[in-house]
Length: 371
Image (cartoon, rainbow, N blue to C red; front, side):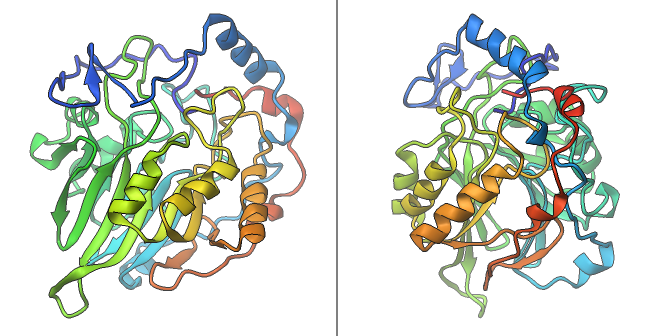
């Protein structure tokens, strides 16, 4: 899970109500299937385990391998390039413009930078060296997906911010020009430069503090390159799916029916636990979601950067790789900073095995669980 258990962060300003949304009721957004309550005692047990019972191998012994990127390399990158920068942060070049998903460049996925889940690795490229962005795509407002400092630094250089309902209000409160912010309910979207972005359903939750739970909407994103190579409208020539955070639910089938088959699905595979199945998927569910979406290639995200659960940090990769091999699913796992050709994805080496043996258990115990 990704909203910190211990956060008492301010909400920055009252969030606007969205009474017209079918997802909004009684002052909060909701999933079609109500989320089971964790409960006070179970929450205390999660806090206890996160502080004192973390397995040593929840963090790598050494920083995972990262391919450093330069501004010049990105300037020369061909269209339909993808670069993983960490966790759920992905850089995409579509129709000549650069887009970034859930950009987090902070040292910690936390409301404060002196405690909380710390990065395993530095980003492959500094925030200041990113190319001018056509847009920023946000899935929800948890700290491992929405970094206030990153947003503020992109406010002047990014062309547009596409968000679920309410998340854009946070951006505006942080100083982003309201004219750049576009907010969407599920099944709504926009076409920019021949690329269509649709906010599609997800099963999750939101909030950055103790009193703002579910005041903003969460979403996955469907991305369709709708312009053919001759510049004419010829139906989507590239179909991508970005999950954000989500539990497994029947919405994947509906998204696949409406917009599939997808050339590539970027699906969360990490920070899962038996204690929170409703909001994060086990690897087996990730694979099933990929099938529901009618995906061709699967790229597992939400892993490899932060310690947000109790499992070994390499486990999501190993489990999803084994499942993909068993079921004949095409799996791609680029290193952080490694280019993936969206037109011709390919299998990559198991880079996570290069990070060595588990780190010291005492260091792991200092990391904070996130919900």
